[in-house]
Image 1: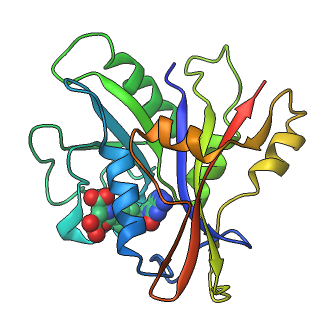
Image 2 (image 1 turned 180 degrees about the vertical axis):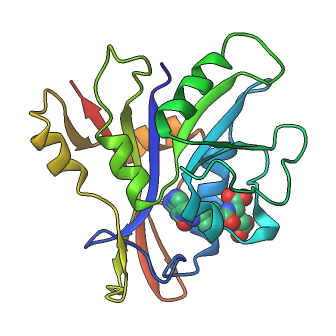
Length: 218
Ligand code: FOL
């Protein structure tokens, strides 16, 4: 099944959110997110998979995220994804669980109305990151797993008022008895994978950050 890429911007203490929003405003970082998640070969589309809180955190004028298949997870099956699903490569669909969403993604690969999915990104938030990293291994019906993390590390300032944190992915791997551990790959590997040039470090609005890629190596 499709391997999954987790994408996240986090502080040195893994802070990712505050009061239901991103703790910072970083237009270039957001442009990297948008370009990376939308970039697919002709005839293919990427999927962005998110929890309901993350969906609600996206400004209404930007959702569904354009040129991507938006997949929202909520146990509340009558949750309304307003405004209704858009057109073309941009769609928004609701699923009651991660496994049902992944099963559907797999199914949509074989034929039907939609463009085949190129890459699937887990875009948060905290609980979906954890659920994805702790997915039961194959040969479960939907055996997807995260083998890559695109991590934008916010170096300074500390953003001590964060109230939402990404899980410690290295600890999860260790707790799972890890046959596979995470290692940071080179900047060249990051650029090759995303398909465009990326600066190593950036400073915006006084915020220092760097673009990283972590890979799970067997
Ligand atoms: N990963 C990274 N690297 N940075 C992030 O900010 C980030 N954010 C989320 C998940 N992974 C991330 C979740 N939060 C939008 C807003 C919040 C959000 C994700 C996306 C959003 O509005 N995106 C628009 C860009 C709009 C713009 O150009 O400002 C998009 O088209 O992707």
